[in-house]
Image 1 (cartoon, helix red, strand yellow):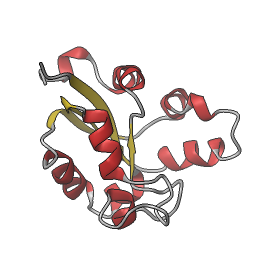
Image 2 (cartoon, rainbow, N blue to C red; image 1 turned 90 degrees about the vertical axis):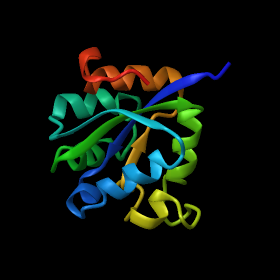
Image 3 (cartoon, rainbow, N blue to C red; image 1 turned 90 degrees about the horizontal axis):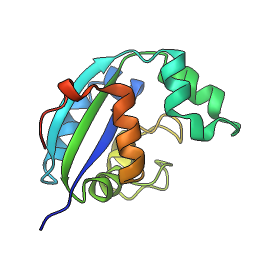
Length: 142
């Protein structure tokens, strides 16, 4: 039996501004994943701080929150077999300079903060993150 997972994907402000959202989503769909929800929004400070709370004590937290609230982002939910691992592999390393050629971050990322995309790091985290951005009614069955 297949284990269907869900993951949150956030396409960050620079990638949205540069018109790369559709290409990033296309790459994720080519992994055999189904997009269950998608919306463009402008994160407010409260949402950004809650989403990145795990990094609150780190020196880059303030810069990250300011960046993520600076312009619109695209939030999406993808579902499928091993969705979290597939998305993380497609994204590449957090630092675009260290990301494998052909990954999303290598192709579209600018630096560690402005690295084009966020993806959930585990199934458990994904469910928490998804609930911050989407209601159950906004998500199609995956």
